[in-house]
Length: 390
Image (cartoon, rainbow, N blue to C red; front, side, top):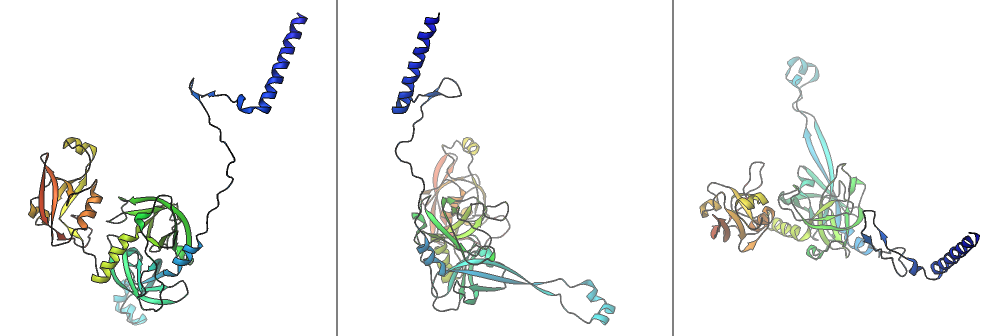
């Protein structure tokens, strides 16, 4: 028995020595696949090979910031509020002692936002909600100059407004191409958050074509994680070259501060709206007078539709262009001028792009049969709080 234990101990010693040599000189031969905790499935882990980077160095964006910052302005608005007249003012005894005061007390409320100089003539692009209730507007440039501004026109349906100020030697921003942006591209948000002064924050393009957010009627937002806070509204979103690619408009937040989900109006849309406002004082869009509804999978099944593309005509305005053309409630609108769309938001943009007064062709489905309807496009009315027809 003693001889057996001696042989066994020597064999174990030799095996451990061999294993030590292998793990020291050839560790790759000692790697083994391990079963997962879920059972008998084997997971092979691929080890990293070669030297690993320890940090990532980003190039400075100071050139982009330097180019764009002079064209971004702070906007200060004030509104006169007249307090209601006290009932005692109608009492003769009260007036005998305190005099006749004909009106209530005047009180001023102030708010702030940002804007972008888009032309050396003094035009400034900002958000509609920044100046919506303003009685007086003051614009402060990055260099310290200030000037009063007047409203050239607004477009509540895209939340854009154009101001005009009388100052010379103004730095105008260069417009970029937001369609050329890709998710992951660097962008800078420039504005006046919380009134602390001009501030630049950096982020990336998080998403494009965001809609159905309930922010405005026409939505095609660029989403970014660049910090946008109250006071940034109307400021510039610029690309890595310092060109304007968006107008900062809104944030998603539970606290009022930045949570890394900000939305900007693409600069190409802002430019179209701006040019119409400068030329005509307002924005003119096409309109056909229908109320639409997105097609859910249940509706597609009930109408025996192969996809959920298109929109259901849920209502037709009496006497409107659609009714005169023979469009009925329950029709499925699938294309506008041969341009197909997936939902009501895309349809609205196609209709709005039509020129009022001209004729257009709609493709609809009625009783599972496709037909074309020729319609004379009307002018989209100004938005109201009541039920609207597109």
